[in-house]
Amino acid sequence: MKKVVKFGGSSLASAEQFKKVGDIIRQDKDRRYVVPSAPGKRDANDTKVTDMLYACYALAESGKKFDRQLEKIQERYQEIIDGLGMAVSLEEEFRQIKENFKKKAGADYAASRGEYLNGILMAEYLGYEFIDAAAVIFFDEEGNFMADKTNEVLSARLKDTERGVIPGFYGAKEDGTVVTFSRGGSDITGSIVAKALHADLYENWTDVSGFLVADPRIIKDAKVIETITYKELRELSYMGASVLHEDAIFPVRKEGIPINIRNTNAPEDAGTMIVEDTCTKSKYVLTGIAGKKGFVSVHIEKDMMNSEIGFGRKVLGVFEDNGISFEHVPSGIDTMTVFVHHSEFEEKEQQVIAGIRRAVNPDSIELDTDTALVAVVGRGMRKNWGTAGRIFSALAHARVNVKMIDQGSSELNIIIGVSESDFEKAVKAIYDIFVTTQLV
Ligand code: ASP
Image: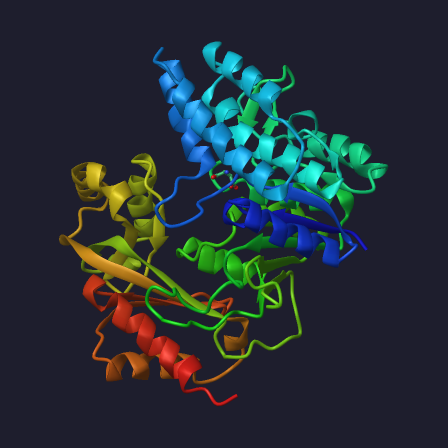
């Protein structure tokens, strides 16, 4: 068996964390390929090495002195080296980095050094081969990830590598210029490596024991989701649940490789399995609840709207022309409501209203800025009766007014619009009815 194991920044923030990671890897001989992040925060007030690197490079770029800042970064690594009792020296690497900062090698190069150096340490610590991501992960001239070329080169490179460390977060253009993925991108590297190896499993080790049924800031001790499908995960991530980088799903999903989210600080926990499909029933009817505040609804009314062919297209065309994507469009006989993100809409508000007036000449347009959306997601809702009934009676008991309901025909989710002030109350009510009071 081949397993790719990715460790996040908090899992590698100190020598103590490195030891836990070493134990985890040595415990299972199939954990042969390791993708590390840069050292993260050691405690709540700490700074991630990636952020230190960005800040240090900003000084270098504007021609200011950056020696002290770079020294502080070096100290973070030295602390790990000393704590592990290793003999390795990063002197030469830091000399090189300093030189490249002076030559203004770019913010991506700067940030990538966090993972690069951690990769060197990890390889040394485990006795695994170090493979620089810049030699195996490729970006085109515009900085777009080149999936096919990467897969080809990476598969060939790893074919004869029994055990290797590939730093996360970055790759390079053909000319060697380093490019990073967006923040949190080591998750993507792990997925790309798993795909190239046809790995049996991609383990993503972090500081939580998996995806939680609901946001722990709202539900204390929220339960862990044992198994979730890619589709469900997409719905929940889109609505704000974040453990894994969104783009990390695509490479492994195409290969049918499951992802297992695990906790470095509680390795005995099984975590969450993310799979293409499963016969495993989720423990509760719902798999998860997520949601976001900050939506605006644009409510349009016009007599006889229903018989006006092309009405919807013309309205949505106005949003398109203004570069605004819409979230949901529930409609009535003579009404149509378009839900959009407040942040996207704010600036273009007057252009959109004028555009709709010109396009369809409505009787009225009303804006409502006080909307939060709650997504109740679960494969268990399909062909099951009573789910919607339970959700809405729970909301009624909690005295939450429902402004909008949207259930896709996939029956995978129900989206509910509520006032922002009711958001937390709504999530709690739904969680309680499906999880807390569920007898299992
Ligand atoms: N170190 C990078 C970040 O902080 C990438 C990662 O950790 O995945 O965003």
